Figure 1: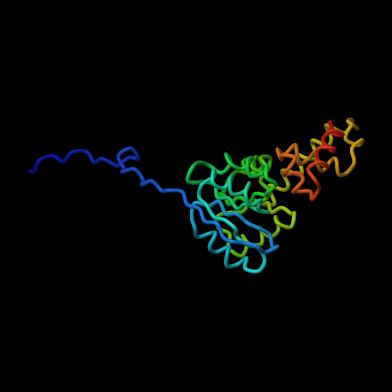
Figure 2: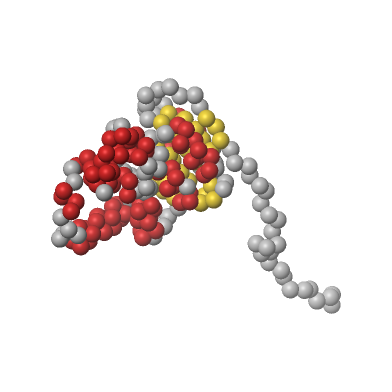
Length: 222
């Protein structure tokens, strides 16, 4: 009989060759239209290219990048209405860059893999206004972009139900606190915006008022 064969070795992640380094990319388009502006922060160029086609005449893709740091800088420069974000980026996870993007007054639409409802609610608490799955068609993604650009939100039904339930609990806990009734409707708008982490300049852009007016409202709120 032949020599006994040794044990079979199954390759592990440690024995696999490391993935090649992918250099972050970015692209900026010349854009002078009054249509909503969109920045795509995605690890692939497929989504931005598809959106560019289906949003033709309704919104414009002004910049595309796979780097979260580049997206923050581009957002500060271009002040887009919506930033479309995929979960994994060339330089980290999307959640790390969402707060900085929100501070310029942009709305965030995140494309994410399936998660538990609690995990999606945490993204909403972080400031994400739209959540869509990776299985959405380009047309469905475009409609979500336009919904956010118009001031709306795009959230799965289970997330909406969880957020509403949490809001109701908060209302019941604060039912005896009448201090907010002393604020005007605009002051409450400013309070909501600054509590989301927006700067005075971003609040002014988001609400369509002067920075000086925002500062006046902040003084009144405090």
